[in-house]
Length: 442
Image (cartoon, rainbow, N blue to C red; front, side, top):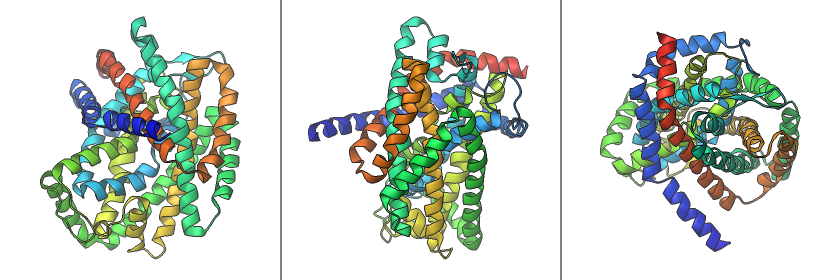
């Protein structure tokens, strides 16, 4: 077992290494230039389309608004709280700047993913609309690329049980046990019941729950963060100056912070930014393929808002709270650093972070259940959906109570491997994305 763990660890170091980060950023930059910087130029239009997309209009299974909320349910998670804190702990405040850069090019990636997902989606034997990287590889590229679609589906199906299920359940169980002394087994069973009740209804119930819960939890968390920033308003200009300076000059050791070079700021800012918003990994387009729309471009404009909301709003709030509160120099990391940052300004702030982390992780389990379900259906057909749902719910209590070091490592590795087929497909299908965009706006 130790040898296997070392092997997976070596593979993880490669797939999440510099070449992968360059590939994800490079693909996003290539798409951004090819689209003539369409995502930032059409941001307001995307917001308007999102507001109009609260009701169904066109072919599909769920309104465009709910499709975005389902994808955000999976992406807004521990990365927004613990991931940002870890990036700052390892790379200094400058890591936040590189997270922003990742998000900007990631908007182009998310746009292209959703355009391809809707353009190449299929209707399965139940009459449900299915899509995502495996389908746009299958239907958009020649048959010699078909194995890439199967590889993506295999990586996604297995990775989901780790990064989208057991790891999330474990995070909730740990934080509730630490803050409220709730037994981990009780948290696991409660999550199992709640998730099972939602999954019975399929994508329509998942999207319905996400459509209500995601806006509530995101707005509540941002509001709490803004309260902290208002209280620490005098520290905000210095925080931005520190972020920009550290991004290009590194961060000196101070307090419990060990110091970080410029390369560390870039590496951890980019890596945690990608981990948070999942742009390029190929997960989000699976949800957007179910949207009720006749226009791939419209759904692409809505989809790119996911990266904007996840990283440029929620991660920024977390990062600024950590920096303005001064907690980043304490030597703490992960969720405990975020908790300390809120607690230094708001009495009981650590409990707010605990509740936010629990809600974020719960919705991530819901969102990833849909991703895994579509991957399994692609590989084994509709008959595999019911067994998948049973297994998905059954492993939640195990995840809540187990030590997951190896599971986390394996899932993190497979998560990165999902990106390879997706990035290849996006580059090869870029001319289609560019043409559909030109035709729509002409």
